Amino acid sequence: MARRKRRTRLDNKGKPSKSKQQAPGAAPGESDAAAASTAEAVDDEPADEAAPAECDCPRLDPEEWDDIESDWGDIQFVQVHAKALMGVPLGFAKLRDDLRDAADAAGATVPEDAMVLLGPGRFRRPVLLEVEKADPGDKGVVMPGGIAYSKLLPAPWGEIGKQAQATTDAAIERYGKKPDAVWMWYLTCNDCSGEREYETLFIAHYREQPSPSS
Image 1 (cartoon, one colour):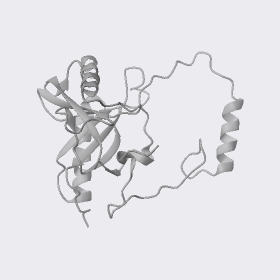
Image 2 (spheres, one colour):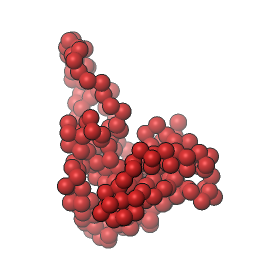
Image 3 (cartoon, helix red, strand yellow):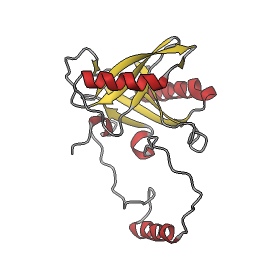
Image 4 (cartoon, helix red, strand yellow):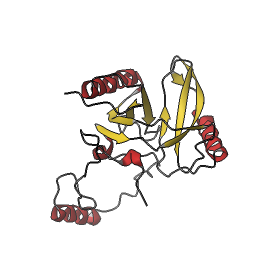
């Protein structure tokens, strides 16, 4: 199965970059032997019967998402809008149902690891759901194009604005111009947010490929 273009890292010349392969379960820079040793040690450890079941929140590999530029040339979304109170979105549960309905109406499929992106706004905020095989002519389908520069950051509620600005600043430093929009993907729930430090993906989007700043 072909990888979607949002997974394709681009180098400083705007070309796909190749990442090093590593053994399954290996940490970055860890040898195959060390990874095997670690796996054996984990297998030998007794199971913790009291350990809570993991939630199904997405967990992103920093090597593929943090400080990474991706091609959005053919990525598709469906869009709805969320009511917000001073920027805080309301009714997320209903929004997910609305997004699924929009995907069905567009004849699209929703990938297992689909992004759910929240856009800017104080009283009304756009929300995007990543889809595949949608009819490009459907009025509910959005194809942003261009490139996306992403940062994987801890973002408790009081820090969201600060981290969004940090992403904007990093994008300006990299490309020499302000992004057209900054989107957020909340990656945690009430069960895992504390342990994962409210991990959030921030995406600085440029509708056209900018030149990296010298």
